[in-house]
Amino acid sequence: KVSLAFQLSPEHDVVRRKKVLTLQASDSIQKIYETISGRSGGHPLWPKDFGELLDSGTADAELFYGAGEKSDDGGPLWCPALGHSVLGDLVRGSDQGAIAD
Image 1: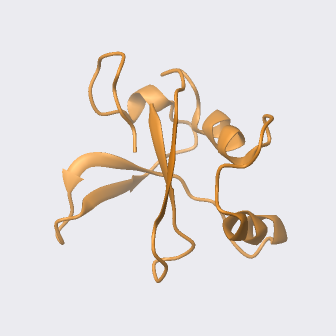
Image 2: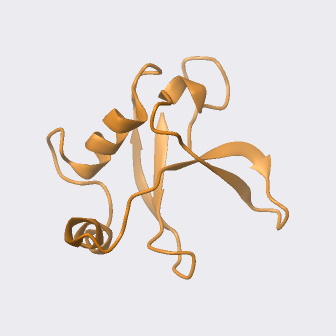
């Protein structure tokens, strides 16, 4: 299960989505991006403004995941998800209900 949040830049607030995606542990980061962007069918899951910036080329999408650790300021530690990664490499826990943020 993957919960989604989007941030236009460090100066902007994080926008969280209520929708939780259920994906396979073998799904690549590329497949997850295609799902979120709507390129694999369905509507994009990110905020409209976010998609417009990507479509215009004024922004690049970067995917991060919650490593399950705390940063120096007490918030979650966000790590970049490498393009060759698969979801199973990024989840916290090992059972069928494992979570990736």
